[in-house]
Length: 377
Image 1 (cartoon, rainbow, N blue to C red):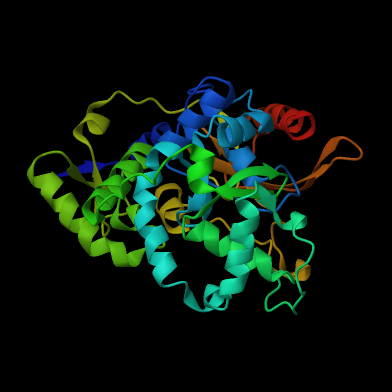
Image 2: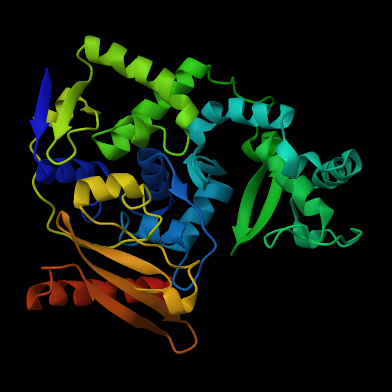
């Protein structure tokens, strides 16, 4: 049997799963970071810093008293989160490390064109240096420099060797100073005699389903297998098994009838009220990053214009959607002037029908809080 849901109900379920309907769902400090990353499944990392970088921004929206030092402690001291690739580079719960070992081993066997060019002597060099202690690319000063092959590449061959060791699971990013990464041997960083046992392919599929159900409330094949279409057949097979056992219910969302969605029975039965909170969200926030899903649920098409030529931009370089309740009501292009100690509004664009004195007051109030986070963190 397929249950029909209104679009508003579907949005409320998703927002609750994202913990955006509560002001302080995880508590404070490094322990809150641990809980937030575990619940969300991953927190994306990005280098753009016209405002505070997205991983800090995402955590701030769920941890009101969040400080960057909280994430540093979780990663470097408590070691409750680590960096790896999900759909992008992200922070992941250290509890989930075993689910990524198969990707690490696969990468080691098939490094691809980019990392296939790393020479054995380059890997031996960085391995030898790492055995002596934690290492950043700035610590390596004797590389024979080469021409860059890509805008984001480095003239130091050791950088690519460090990255290869990271993706193959030999190394781990043990600390960040800004965006400068410090590497350590994985087993030494975590205090392991040997790596945890790798999850089986079936366990990994189950993990991705559970991760999506926890953080999204309502899931589809696209939302579970975001940017990983090869995983869809195995994922659908497990979903169908769960439906037969009544562990999942198929739902049809108003306006999204041609797409299959599922949720747990308890999510359907739970009493869920529409959020009363206002959030200025990162374009990399888990609620925003899956653009097709966002459009489907919110009838809002987020346009990321950072890589669009200035003269062709419509909304701004780094537009941030504003969520009020279960509606996206505006888009703000913000910039932090750290020298002048102020948050600058480059542009303010309203969603049709949402401009009002009340909504403006709500956004201005949230902007004051957001500015404090930007300048005093």
